Amino acid sequence: MKLDRKIISWALYDWANSAFATTVMAGFFPVFFKQYWSAGTDATVSTFQLGLANSLAGIVVAALTPILGAIADRGSSRRKFLLFFASMGIVMTGSLCFVQKGDWHIAAAIYVIALVGFSCGNMFYDSLLVDVAEEHRLDFVSALGYALGYLGGGILFTLNVVMTLNPQLFGLADSGQAIRLSFASVAVWWAVFSIPVVVFVKEKGTPAGREGISAVKAGLKQLSTTFKKIRRLRVVFLFLAGYWLYIDGVDTIIRMAVDYGLSLGFSYDSLILALLITQFVGFPSAIAFGKIGEVIGTKKGIFIAVGVYLGITVWGFFMSVELEFYVLAALIGTVQGGVQSLSRSFYARIIPRNQAGEFFGFYNMIGKFAAVLGPALMGWIGVLTGNPRYAILSISLLLLAGVTVLYFVDEKEGSRLAREME
Figure 1 (cartoon, rainbow, N blue to C red):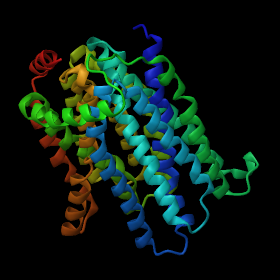
Figure 2 (cartoon, one colour):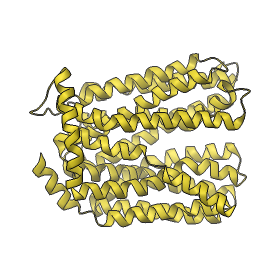
Figure 3 (cartoon, helix red, strand yellow):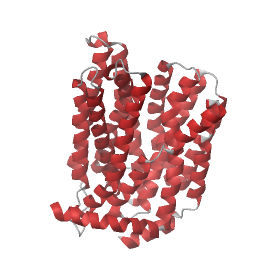
Figure 4 (spheres, rainbow, N blue to C red):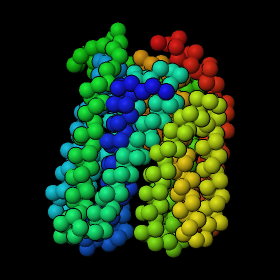
């Protein structure tokens, strides 16, 4: 399949910002926050501080994305908003290098702003999918973005892990200096590979395109009608309900996997290796799921991916050795990008293209509220039973509920209604 410049440029943004997700969010920030910026603080207190920072960022993003999406649609300025929030994330990520030991409050504040930039930028990036891909190519192009994200994020994360474990090989004094340099490398990587999407992706204008204050007023007015549209569009409403349930299960497995492995007595080094396995397996698998969506249908592809996650929760219940954790990491990498990319392309088909910003604002808001039920469910079941194995098994309830709702989503009807509203 021929790839033109705008598709490659759009997908490269995933390559760019996934470095933040891997090196900063999943890899080094939590560890450095606890051991350096919160040095001398009780472990439970530093965990609370980090959790509060993540929650605050999530609340801000969930509140902003629907509003910003509507404003960007009215002003035909999704690409400008992407540049603004990406720049915010890049500058703040680079600023982490200069935070001194013990200044946990400064580190947390910078992290919150960076996370808001990362998340809001993703919303506008997602909404540009309809500007770079025709409907019959949505699955593949969406999957290509996730695939390059796994590869790019994995490559830089690997380099940063090696640099942190062997700082002397890079002329660095210690691992702390290596981690600081890792934050800087993410900022540079994110900035450089964001250039193509800004230069080569042209947003399709709308007849209602406006500028400045008029765009803000029109966007806020438009937002008030979006709730009504989603309530009327039964297909969109059902999809968002099902998506929230199964993506909550998926995100919980991703976020709680390391904690679960530690509770079973596995080493931290092994868990980091498993994270790298997930990244590199995710690259070809995301592309493969893009083709699966084109051949057998997007919804069937989602069913397959969620089915594998159901198998993972069952296997995780019986898991006893680290080798099994590596296998499960590979399985997660096989379907993680698939379920994310196909969900995005499925949603793009059932919404009006000229209102993609506001509708993807709600989509991303749902994503921010994901992994809310799952961790709470795991914690409650774990405390109730005293066994973390039952906790991981409980996630299967969310996955089953999500695909059950998805079963009743009629893609053809949704696509027809979306075209009528354009």
